Image 1 (cartoon, one colour):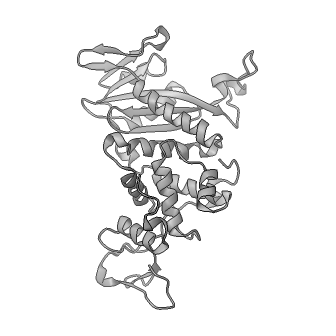
Image 2 (image 1 turned 180 degrees about the vertical axis):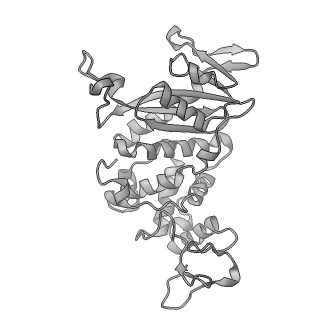
Image 3 (image 1 turned 90 degrees about the vertical axis):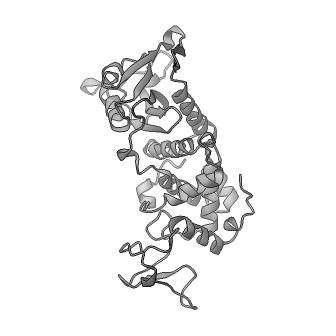
Length: 327
């Protein structure tokens, strides 16, 4: 972990210069018209302009490095933004808004909103066009249940799932997350309304290359869709089978189970509560850290800078995040 005495965490101008280097490695780019010709962009100086303001001579608009990003129109100094990004990227199981509120010296409401903006920057924009896996690669798929639904799930004919004898509704009234992971590669988790063959198939075919080999448990959700892949192998957890060797490969779903384990530890131990409307943002956060993990030779500093490169084109207002269920 880099020293927290780094000037980019202490000085707003140093933070701005670092952010410019990440967003504009080849020089300023106008967010209004896309002009990147250095001869048609000039830095404005003098008492009338704060440092970091540029003017594009193509569209005559002024801009800074934060225009068109999740940092736009924020009154929080950039050095505090960069420190918040670094702390969230370097903490394997996340960092709560209350912790950032205390460390950054901002209000809890501000810290909560900062966290959601940073999660938006972590969101993978390439997911729809870059499926996991491929020929000769293995994908593990599974589903998990976490927390209680805020809107009870309805069954057929409008009936609501009934609680068990213990008084709890069990998995029927829990939030459902479907996860995929490519062995040695990336993970993707999705919040779905129902865990059935249709929703699971939609997640799989949109996010996994069907030339991959698919590994799952014995759940009945996967056999039909598994037939569309190069091969589908299962492990029988109900029979206490968790792994078996087949030639040079080992059939198991331990990788996706590990992804879920870190996610649940973070949600229970760090965040403790998450509004259902925001669950997809937390999933993006945990996916981002897993996909840039140390095992892939990505350091905390590199992970932070990758998050900073993802801030562009992701405007997020407080109203869009929803003003309830602060986590």
